[in-house]
Every structure is written in C-alpha cells, then in structure tokens.
Length: 83
Image (cartoon, rainbow, N blue to C red; front, side, top):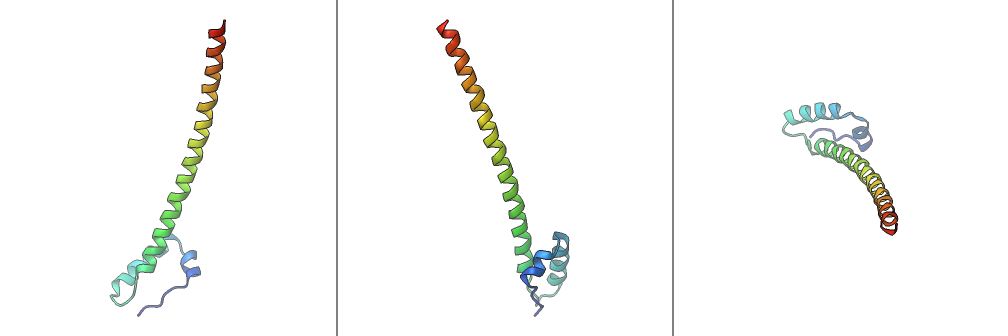
C-alpha cells in the first residue's frame, strides 16, 4: 500500500501537484487516492465559499444603496405632496 501523506504535506501542495500525485497513485491499483480527491474538493469548496461571501457583501452594499435612494425618493414625494 502507498504512503499516505501527512495533512501538512497535502496543504503545502499546489492543486497541480495534487493532481499529478493523484494520477500517479491512480496508476497503482493498490494505492489509495481518495485523500487527494478530498484535498482538491476541500480547496474548491473554500474558493466557492470565499466567492459567495464576496458576492454576499456586494448584495448587502447594494441593498443599503437602494434603501437609501428609496428613502430619498419618499422624502421628495412627501415634500411635493405637502406643497
């Protein structure tokens, strides 16, 4: 059975290095490859989470802007109606 890399070693590898190691391990039917797939999946999920957080912050900012201009519009409408 192949040597299972330590967690720190997996973290230190780039995505490309993980893929190369996965391909090398996949050629050997005895060696496990799931930990390489899991490491790549975790990284992809982390990238997606970061992107979703960024988009959520943009949505929050846009919501505040729309609420601000809605309030301005309401104030203008009240002023015009009261004249």
